Image (cartoon, rainbow, N blue to C red; front, side):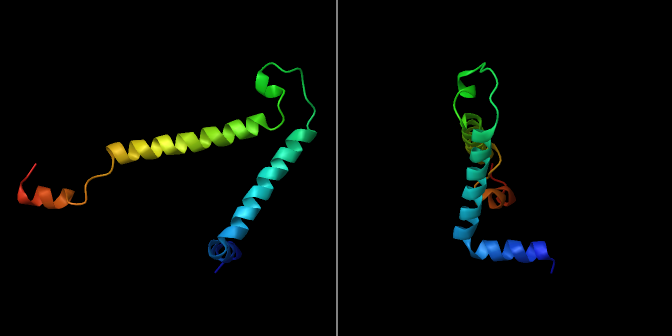
Length: 90
Protein backbone atom coordinates (compact mmCIF):
# COMPACT_ATOMS: atom_id res chain seq x y z
CA UNK A 1 0.00 0.00 0.00
CA UNK A 2 1.03 3.58 -0.43
CA UNK A 3 2.13 5.84 2.38
CA UNK A 4 -1.06 7.89 2.14
CA UNK A 5 -3.28 4.83 2.59
CA UNK A 6 -1.16 3.67 5.53
CA UNK A 7 -1.40 7.13 7.12
CA UNK A 8 -5.17 7.26 6.70
CA UNK A 9 -5.55 3.74 8.12
CA UNK A 10 -3.40 4.68 11.11
CA UNK A 11 -5.37 7.89 11.77
CA UNK A 12 -8.70 6.05 11.53
CA UNK A 13 -7.55 3.82 14.38
CA UNK A 14 -6.59 6.87 16.50
CA UNK A 15 -9.51 9.35 16.45
CA UNK A 16 -8.14 11.40 19.36
CA UNK A 17 -4.89 11.99 17.47
CA UNK A 18 -6.84 13.02 14.39
CA UNK A 19 -8.91 15.46 16.48
CA UNK A 20 -5.74 16.88 18.04
CA UNK A 21 -4.23 17.43 14.58
CA UNK A 22 -7.44 19.10 13.40
CA UNK A 23 -7.62 21.41 16.42
CA UNK A 24 -3.93 22.33 16.12
CA UNK A 25 -4.45 23.25 12.45
CA UNK A 26 -7.42 25.43 13.42
CA UNK A 27 -5.36 27.00 16.22
CA UNK A 28 -2.52 27.68 13.79
CA UNK A 29 -4.92 29.37 11.39
CA UNK A 30 -6.22 31.51 14.25
CA UNK A 31 -2.65 32.40 15.27
CA UNK A 32 -1.79 33.41 11.71
CA UNK A 33 -4.96 35.49 11.57
CA UNK A 34 -3.94 37.33 14.75
CA UNK A 35 -0.54 38.13 13.22
CA UNK A 36 -1.98 39.44 9.95
CA UNK A 37 -1.87 43.14 9.22
CA UNK A 38 -5.32 44.69 9.59
CA UNK A 39 -6.78 47.13 7.12
CA UNK A 40 -9.46 49.71 7.80
CA UNK A 41 -12.44 47.67 9.00
CA UNK A 42 -15.49 47.82 6.76
CA UNK A 43 -17.58 45.31 8.71
CA UNK A 44 -17.89 44.52 12.40
CA UNK A 45 -16.23 41.15 11.76
CA UNK A 46 -13.07 42.84 10.49
CA UNK A 47 -12.36 44.16 13.99
CA UNK A 48 -12.58 40.77 15.73
CA UNK A 49 -9.59 38.44 15.48
CA UNK A 50 -10.64 35.06 14.08
CA UNK A 51 -14.17 36.16 13.26
CA UNK A 52 -14.10 35.09 9.62
CA UNK A 53 -12.57 31.71 10.51
CA UNK A 54 -15.34 31.11 13.04
CA UNK A 55 -17.95 32.44 10.61
CA UNK A 56 -16.75 30.02 7.92
CA UNK A 57 -16.74 27.06 10.32
CA UNK A 58 -20.27 27.78 11.58
CA UNK A 59 -21.51 28.38 8.03
CA UNK A 60 -20.02 25.08 6.87
CA UNK A 61 -21.57 23.15 9.76
CA UNK A 62 -25.00 24.73 9.22
CA UNK A 63 -24.87 24.08 5.49
CA UNK A 64 -23.92 20.44 6.13
CA UNK A 65 -26.85 19.95 8.52
CA UNK A 66 -29.26 21.65 6.11
CA UNK A 67 -28.16 19.57 3.12
CA UNK A 68 -28.27 16.37 5.16
CA UNK A 69 -31.83 17.22 6.18
CA UNK A 70 -32.79 17.82 2.55
CA UNK A 71 -31.26 14.48 1.62
CA UNK A 72 -33.26 12.67 4.28
CA UNK A 73 -36.42 14.49 3.26
CA UNK A 74 -36.26 14.03 -0.52
CA UNK A 75 -33.80 11.23 -1.35
CA UNK A 76 -34.11 8.55 1.32
CA UNK A 77 -36.79 5.91 0.89
CA UNK A 78 -38.40 3.70 3.53
CA UNK A 79 -36.71 0.34 4.10
CA UNK A 80 -39.63 -1.54 2.53
CA UNK A 81 -39.81 0.72 -0.54
CA UNK A 82 -38.79 -1.94 -3.06
CA UNK A 83 -40.91 -4.71 -1.56
CA UNK A 84 -43.99 -2.46 -1.83
CA UNK A 85 -43.35 -1.92 -5.55
CA UNK A 86 -42.93 -5.66 -6.21
CA UNK A 87 -46.35 -6.41 -4.70
CA UNK A 88 -47.98 -3.76 -6.85
CA UNK A 89 -48.77 -1.48 -3.92
CA UNK A 90 -48.34 2.23 -4.24
